[in-house]
Length: 260
Image (tube, rainbow, N blue to C red; front, side):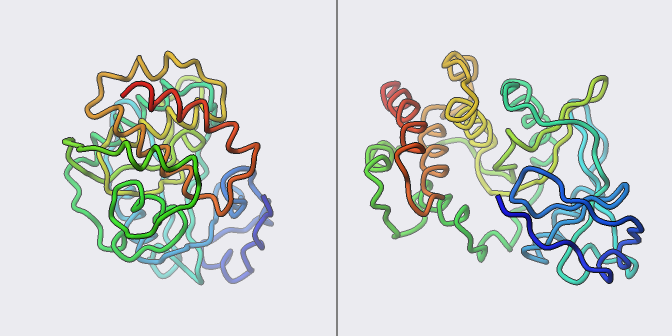
């Protein structure tokens, strides 16, 4: 992943950052650390402002902690196309999928009363398009052969939608003695268990998780259907699907389809 350009001097000044920025690993290669702050480009100012407002006012809760936003000197949550967050201690561990799911459940319970934000309707990026494909909200089609049986396997989902985090496995941070930290929130309007299904799919595809992970969370509502949609979502974000990626997805696709 190529690192994005560093924040400019005026961005650092706007957020009161006094140390030279250092690139942070992981994610999409866009985050920089300056002392106790993490700075990232704000891809969508309405989304940045909404997310920061929610997390600024979110009370402490059992089972998770969150990265808190930092306002700019003018009081806004974005400045010169950037946003800032307090550095949160801990490290991601993709082999702790069960703990990630539990942290996500606690986080989603705290968000369950939020209304659907308007920016989701107009957001355009590969992940949003893949999400709409998974949920039959677009006429677009994919020519990936691996997707065809998954698209055909979609059925009814009864669980209600709410605001969720759509990329938990690599963004939940663990620190001894502290609850897991929710960071880099990617908001979607879907059933809460869909976020858990994405964690399970990611862990099976990329972190050598035991297949028993699926059984441990099979009590969640619409579990098999949400796994189907999680796989469509992940696969459809690719511009092309090379042999290596397909070999990672295919066993999990076969496993989920066989459970129908």
